[in-house]
Amino acid sequence: MIKKTRTKPLKLLKFEVLLERILPNLTQKQLIETNYRKYLAGFRGELTLDYFLSELPQDDYHIFHDLRIPRYDNNQLYFQLDAFILHPRFCILIEVKNLIGNLYFDHQYDQIVRTREGIDETFPDPVNQVEIQKKHLSNWLIKHKTPLIPIHTLVVITNPKSYIRISPKYGKNARKIIRGRTLSNKIKEIEKLEAEVILQKREIKKISSLLLKEHTPLNPDILKLFNIHRDEILTGAFCPNCTQVALIRIKRNWLCTSCSKTFINAHKKAILDYALLFSPVVKNKDLRTFLHMESQSSLKKLLYSMNLKPNGSRKAATYIIPLPK
Image 1: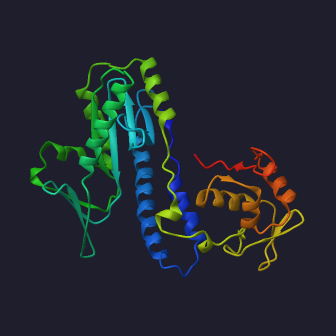
Image 2: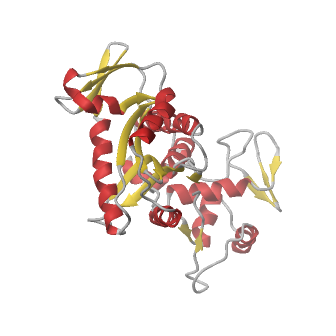
Image 3: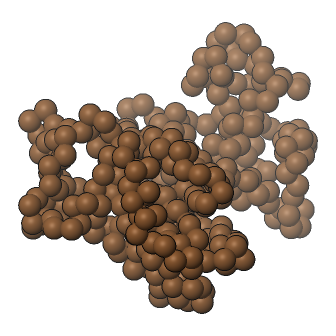
């Protein structure tokens, strides 16, 4: 049973909006594109994992995708789980890697060395990463006074074109590194090891509710991350047909001066873009500037049509634009 579906992360959505709206000649654009491609590859790897997890029996397994939970010792810090599987007899933490190339798991230096097209690149050892997550999860479960349940960890390589080599000194941890297509069989092995039922239905329900309640999506300031100023962002509602051509508001429609097509709801994406790049809390004046609109009442009607109502006194009223979950 899927208890938390995987959705496109806020950070990925912010990357996409930033690349659409950043001035084309900025020096940071190449760096942003490189980081976006890496983040997108990771997300695609997680989607591939979801396919393999779909083979598990729906009644026995409770699956959570992409959890980010406050740490027991510091609520300002978080531990993130690419996938978490809860079973009455055990649970499994999964770290996903979607790397292509020759991968060498180097035990001595706690790293993966990826060789691709003659170039070496290093990444943190995902086995160590998932073991750290296990420690945080264990303490989280203790904090919430749940029964002690065996916690297993796996590192799943989802890219079928990767070539995997593992240091001979890895020992038993080498068995935690698997390919996506063998995930179902690996979980069946764990099933055979863990015979005792630890969690009853009410306890599974309690843990599930707590995880969903405490899940806190990563919401970075993408402009600050790449040192981008507000005046380096293209404003306006874009034409869906001509991409980055700003539309003008005429009566109740948005008109593209390039292709002459009109659109009714082009403002909706632009308003969400504003929330993703700047802030989901916004004043009427700020949105009018962003959308190139002069009429305060016209914008107010658009916001009401999106079920967005003002908060606070008239002059200081703000609107809260809901972000995707």
